[in-house]
Length: 139
Image 1: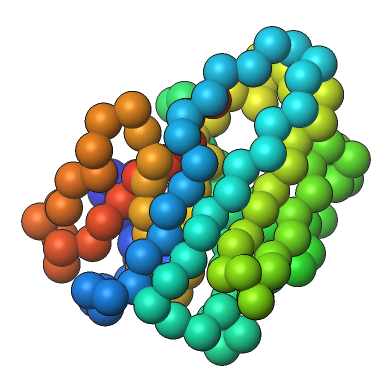
Image 2: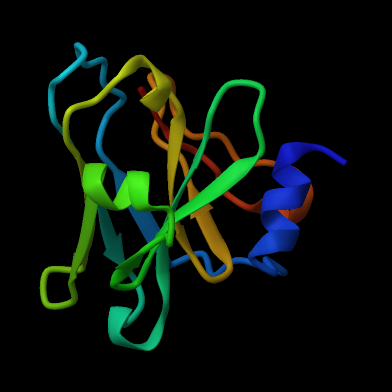
């Protein structure tokens, strides 16, 4: 089973609403010790009625849930490094990482029920599996 299939199954993605959009920050590269702020701008749905998540996938590893609608994962190391927030009036979900290290290199995904979007250096492509958009911020 591919990582994409596992991701889709994990979040029970069974379809997409074509008007829903998640637009993430562009891909970035940071030096050790620097801070990164990644934002996801949403439209086409009411954020107060949906859970939003940040997940990441390190090279060659499984996906890892980092933040979900107001709380970070129970991993204490990440709690000291990452903070997340959501602004329902502006339709944005943001995660900030401090004191970055090489082990923070990963693809970071903004996720909403039924929709997963990815920001990369090339345009987002429609995938054949139920035409779900997928993308990420690559650090």
